Amino acid sequence: MRIGLVGTESTHVDHMIRYCNVEGRGGDARIVAVASQAGSAGERDVGLPVVPAAEDLIGLVDAVVVTDRHGARHAAHALPLLAAGLPVLVDKPLAVSVSDAEAMIRTAERHGAPLTSYSALRWLPEVRALIRDAVPTAVAATGPVDPDSPDGGIHFYGVHPVEMALTLCRGELGAVQVTRTRDAIVACAAVGRTAVTVTMVRPAPERVPFHLAVVAEDCSLATAEPVLDDHYLYPGLDAFFAMVRTGVPPVPYDELLRSVRFLAAAAEPGAHLS
Image: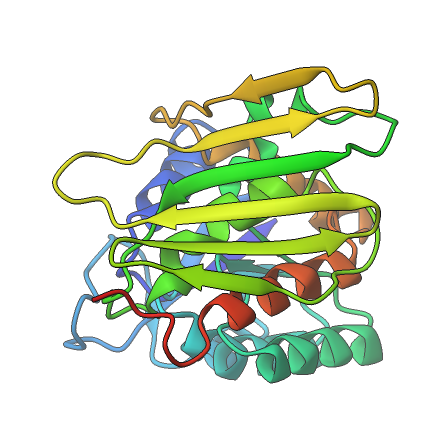
C-alpha cells in the first residue's frame, strides 16, 4: 500500500513516517511520496520523493494524508484527491469553515472516496474508556488554545477538547453559547440529550492539561487526563489504515461536521482573547 503526504511542516509527519516506514505498524503500507512546496515557510525535507502539488500524487499512491497545519488549506488539497477516488485522512482540524468541510464530504460521497479526520485524542485509551452504551447526561472537556496561532487560531488546538467531548455524545448539535474572558473561551451546547461544555484556555505561563469529565445517567462521575506520549498518534493511524482497507470511515460524516460547526461558533468575531 503506497501512502502519500501533503505538506511537511507538521511534526505529525515524523510520527507517520516512523509508524509506517520504520516500525511497519501499517502492515505493507509505506509512505512513498510527499507533495510539498520547496522553500515555503515551514516546509522541510523528510527524505522522501517530492512532487509539487497534491494532485501530482494521483497515480503514485493508494491513499493520502493531508498534513497541512492550517485547516484553511485542507479543502484545496483534499478535493482533487477525493475526486480521484483516493481514501484521504485530513489531519486535524478537518476545516476552519463549515463550507469547506461540507465540500469535502460531498466530494467523498460523490466519488466513493473514504474520508476521515479527527483529533488523535479521541482514539486514546483514556478517552475510549469513558464511552458507554447509555447516553451521558453531561460532558465537560478542557484543553489549551492559542487564539493567535498562525495556523487557524483556536481551530488548531481547540479541536482536541471539542472532539474529546463530542466523541462521547450522540445526536445533533444544538445552538452553541459562547462566553469569553481574557484567558478562556467556554462553549456550551446540547448534543442530543447531553449537555456539553468545552473550556479552552490560553496556556501561559503554565501548561494547560487536557481533561475530560463525564456525568452518567445515574449521576456517577468519571474523569480522564489523556496521556500524549511518543506514540499518541498511533491509535488514530490504526483507524485510518483500517478505513483504507475496508472503505468504511471510522467517524460518520455527520460527526465530522459537528466538530467543525462547534468550533466555527466558538471562533466567531470576538472570540479572540485579549
